[in-house]
Length: 243
Image (cartoon, rainbow, N blue to C red; front, side, top):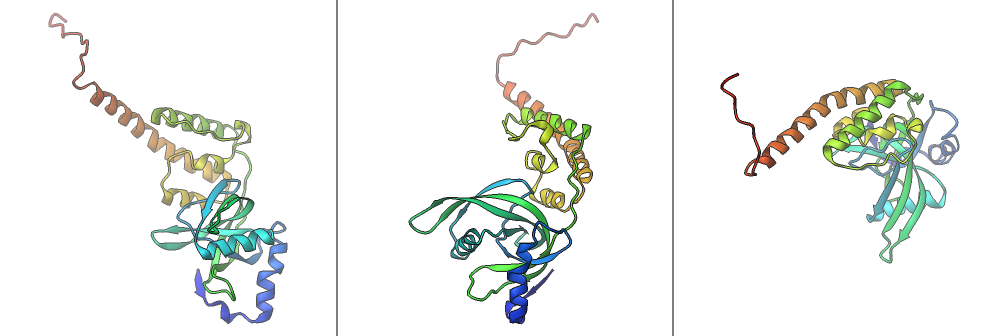
């Protein structure tokens, strides 16, 4: 991933990057194009509904530009104060509130995964940055019996943690991306998951994660119960020496 100054592009490049590729976003997976970017320390997955509160002037401008022209923008992942290579293209579905001070509450939806090829830190007359990206091929076929087992495991995890989460879809419509944020992965793990471009790879990743996590959480719950019993009156059966 390279960084460059936008001034290195001539007028013809500017037209091609800013205008033509947007028209082809849903046509081919192998294309390369320009997108405005809003780097964040989160991972967004295709199909995910994400609500954002926008307060920085540069991103208020980005949101107004994208919403006015019905264009998507990219959320590349920030890990350890570093802009990562992978991110997700998102579409603004609604500006819910525009506050008197110009701050915005918006709703967005994840569209597709991209890889950053080059960062354009400065754009003419813009406060925000952009990037040249491409879109890796991404296989999304449903996971059959494996995803059913994963859904059951995640619900078991939630039961142990005493949390209630709604997938917001019928079980038969769920794919790996719908499960990812519910599995208790770290940001680094969620980013690694984002880089997997085959549904079976993603399901196997979740399976390995849950296989590690569930026994740990179960033992912690057992430990918590033992600690809570300390100091309480307990009815315990004495040892029988005659056994």
